[in-house]
Image 1: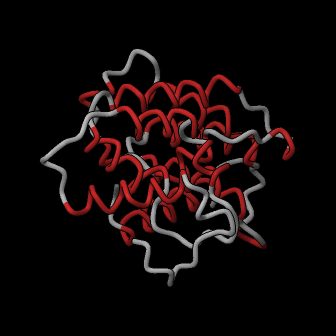
Image 2: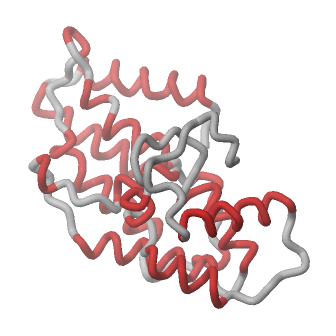
Length: 208
């Protein structure tokens, strides 16, 4: 993931270029930017930040215009032919993955339910038979540090099936090499599966 300041600069440059293009060329330009970036965060920001510009910065491009390119990019990165066991997650973004797993039809955006299944299968291949990988995926991607005002179950479901999480937590073999961070992550997973976070999670709760 690009450093925050650098990513912000790149996003600003993309916005400035889009503003200089004829209206008819802006969608194609932004679609190409989404397709060509190696960084999930940048693709997600182009999709969700540049489409929210107001006033003179409004470029007249909607999420619906760009979402097909975003979904196609995510399918290519996390698809069924990808070697998930050796996948480098350093350019992955939890919230981009969560958005990809949503049903956005209520917002007038056409999504494919198969995308959620593709992502679910990716995570199952990534985790494999490793309790350590389950811990890493849970703390970094399934329930990252954030304030959750409501039950986070649906957000997790957008990334991986909770039924699969339950099965993995129960069935994966014990691992004596787990780090303290792994153990803490698995304890939070247990608490989630036990229903302790039905009312959300306060940022000052100290669970992390």
